[in-house]
Length: 223
Ligand SMILES: [Zn+2]
Image 1 (cartoon, rainbow, N blue to C red):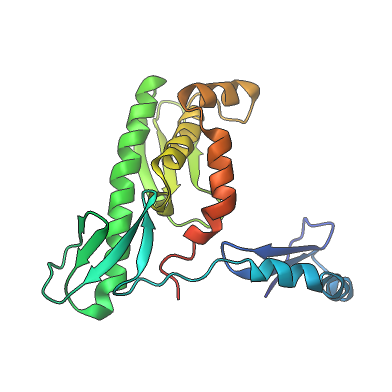
Image 2 (cartoon, helix red, strand yellow):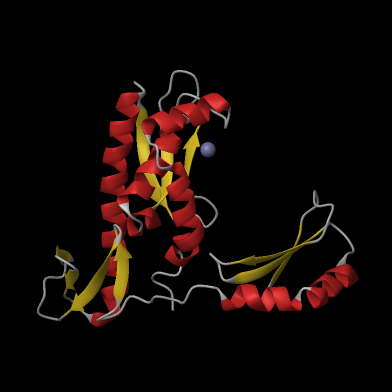
């Protein structure tokens, strides 16, 4: 449970954050504790139901299955395998010391994400005849991508969650098309949505997929 004060908050808010696996209460800059406790009490059943629906941790260990590009990969660890992970069909072969397995797998996933998202960003950017200076990956919990509006005379930078690599390609493409559409429209206007739809038509299916599975992607590598 995390309680935070937000000077700008007017109302007390209770949130069960499925991506982080925490219950968050936001309070205004002063007071509100008694009301927050009342809110907690009156929403106990709702909260318990939300928490029960949270994803399960999916630690990276020998034999574990992890989502990757819309499929499941089995972690095939053996000390005799090469240290650099190698995909063989639905297995990911990894060698080296077992304690380093999780970190090495995460690095491999992040490198795959960066390569994949960089090439699709360049492909969509070419369709709108815009330049992208840099594609970066990170692990934000609240958004799948972000596009920094460039300063005059500079090309834009786009960042993504590396966890998109765990999702099917159609989801990745739709998120990339969204960020690339921001190279033309720095807002969520009708013109932006029209351009996004013309670049990639799978926005409704992507929203549905992320609503259902998005939080679970944040539990991969946890535990
Ligand atoms: Zn946007």
